[in-house]
Image (tube, rainbow, N blue to C red; front, side, top):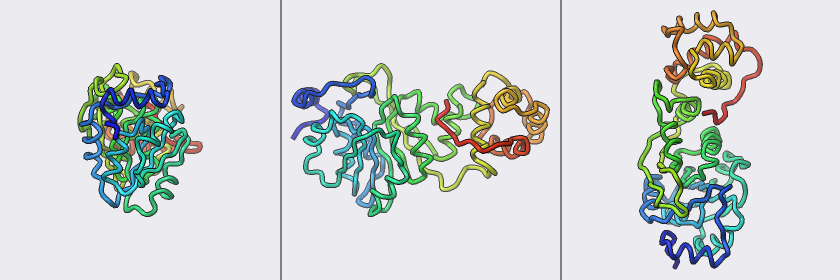
Amino acid sequence: MTNLTEIHEIKALLDRHGFRFSKSLGQNFLRASWVPEKIADAAGLDEHTGVLEIGPGIGCLTAELSRRAKKVLSIEADRALQPVLAETLSGRENVELLFGDALKQDFAALARERFASCGRAVVCANLPYNISSPVLTALVRAGRFQRLTVMVQRELAQRVCAREDTADYGAFTVLMQWHALPEKLFDVPPDCFIPAPKVTSSVLRLERRAAPPAAVNDEGRMFALVRAAFGQRRKTLCNALANGMGLPRERIAEALKGLNLDERVRGEALSLADFAALSDALSENMTGPARTAGPAS
């Protein structure tokens, strides 16, 4: 059996199938056995769990998930890996491969249809750097996964876990933390991959919230406000919202005062509850259809 994290065996496997790495797909395969083992352990899997994996590569994490879960559904964009995965995952009857673009998938439908026999659905993946933000956005908004355990670029992990009044805190932070409770577990250095990336990776665990962290009348409008607040983050919140949403500056200042917030405050100083309260306070001035949240930075 091929050792899927031993460098010489990885190269022999890929050469055997004529595989070449694609920079456009952000392919970096793990070559340190402790990493997929530790990620799979952190996911907290059991015989009742269905696991969605995105970007299996040559299958080293997939194999670890298969040993621990009831079912694994792996989505891979690169069809050149089809014969590779057919070899490395041969005999693993609880693994299903789906070749296609993860960003075009209906994650809620996949969880509902493919994990119907499982007690719960989770995500565990070494996400390609180039799609990490939009994939995380789609996964948390799907609302079907109890836990996400994912490896991403360290800078993105810092943004997901950031606290207010820090440089990393932004619209993407608010979106992630509105839906889930994030925790950074450990870092993975570049030399654990082939080819080695130029950045350090981090493993995150996000537990889905049972309910939003604050009451709000319209989430879509709140996230429109959040995007506007961080769209010009060096400006005061009054100016950012006046420019980004066309709201009267005096009305914004009045709403901030009503929430005991200084009118010179910047968006990065507001908590999730603050954004919810401000959205409701300004709702009478926020006309037009609600906009849904996207992977804003």
